[in-house]
Image 1: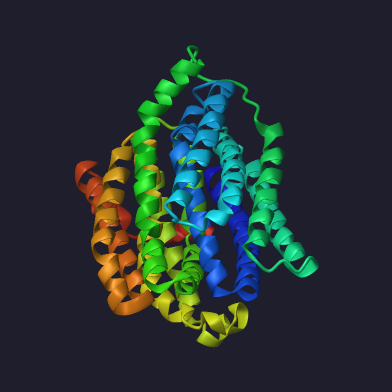
Image 2: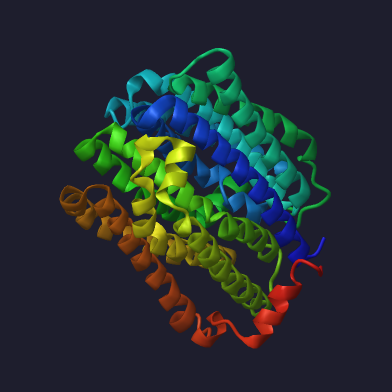
Length: 420
């Protein structure tokens, strides 16, 4: 399947997944309420951090190394890293009460299952098996929303455990479905072995994961500040708003997956840059249009869908919207730098954004409530994006004009859904 066809397929399946995920958000928001949603968001954040730590050996570097190394030499170190990071990180975060310790068991279980599932997903990307990747992704979210609906409406479980149990089951099902596709016809490194693989992944992936950890903290530091300053009910409103806003990122995230998978197997820089700039332009136009659609919806729609407890959602969306556009562009540039072995650029940008939000989120949240948290996020996203753009244009010597929409791009985008 061609590059454009893969983008269309990935976008289509991500749209389906996004609608299913939206349904899950609606159920949890309406039936669990703002405070419990805030508690869930802290556990989800803890799981994300645990996965990032284990991702040094089981994360995005697998996409790069799958065509080059034996899969069996990739999987065992990845599984071990997943187990260690899930146990250690979740325990430490609960010990410091960065989420409610009563949910520690759920956090460890979901972290393990999601990490195993994600490990296989990165292998599928490295193998360029995008059809199974997309299909299994749909199955996983359908199982998740079905599980939540059954537990909430069928068994009348209206607490965070309903969400956690459904997620654990969905990741287990997704992991099992990926197993038949873990087959590799060939790999380029004849010296592939466990020691060799671990050394190479650490050399390539350590900085990448440090960048991802900085990035995650950059994105979510405001959650902890809101939790401490305003309480879990306010955090629930903010977390739902961020989930809705970040749903718009399905365009950039879908395309970046295809882009990374494709250029991880390319060697000619001009081809890599061309694919990056063309997908970047398509991404920011699409993201802008989706943001406009979100912002024109009246407050009454959000209240009707999620309940009147979430009446602040619309105004927070207005404040966070520019940051979502910055993130969409940053996502594509991050894939580019990862593909050309310059992951330190992502680390520098994420660290810069983290430092900025660390300095401003507390006072802004104190002065402006949730709106302040949104503004702090937008500023930090902008700083990270500026770092990436400076590197891309001035250090990599790619002309700034290549990032602007031209007549050729318009013609290309009108054909993208009808050609391969």
